[in-house]
Image 1 (cartoon, one colour):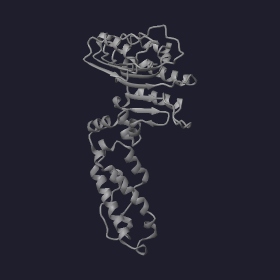
Image 2: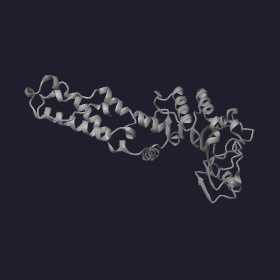
Image 3: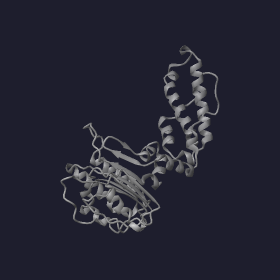
Image 4: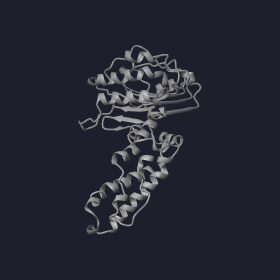
Length: 326
């Protein structure tokens, strides 16, 4: 902070401009970008701010005729610098890194990507300044909650989020989450024409299956049965919660192969499942303590209830005997 060139004395006239040197805009920007909350001398920033406010007050108290044109032209820049230095002195900038980290973790509720919206709080935090960027990128939990929902197609045809953007978001979050457990919510498009986007998303996520803690999937049942998901079998050591909402079609033949990719999940306790006669899935039923049967026939829900012998919480959600569940 020794290079701030802070004026040591204040004069009573704006004509004494030789005693007042504006800080270079580039120097102020360097302060704003730097890790000022850890290293910079806030007392000197306060001194420079007080000096700048003093000269601004002189400019505002005098008529235009009494103020030299050269100083009048600097008034706009001076006003901007006052705003910037006040920002440097804001309480949020002076918090210890540990406190700031806890605040970041509270406000970052996860990355949400739909066809119409991209909401990534951790990314927004990292765009405030270099200090916050470095801090946000060093906290894995901020990047470990990923919600991608492309299942619903909006009325508007102008999709904001394309495949390249999704891949970039996924890559960033998977990299910066490091070894943190992952919470994944996945709603994949049912249109076969979008199979490339679907495959790209799955191929990005599957190698990280050992970190899956919560996994929610909504999409075509055939997607879950595809070869790309095979590799997660036996690679779900941290999976605690699983939710499956699968789509089948009336004229679709039953899937002959029983899906067993979730059977070997030693920590799985919470299961939300849509049972259908069009497919069969193996779960570690005796481990489940919290079970929800959803969008199914009541007869199928009862079959499942007979298997969750250790469940102490059971929910039957929108299971209807009067219509055929797809």
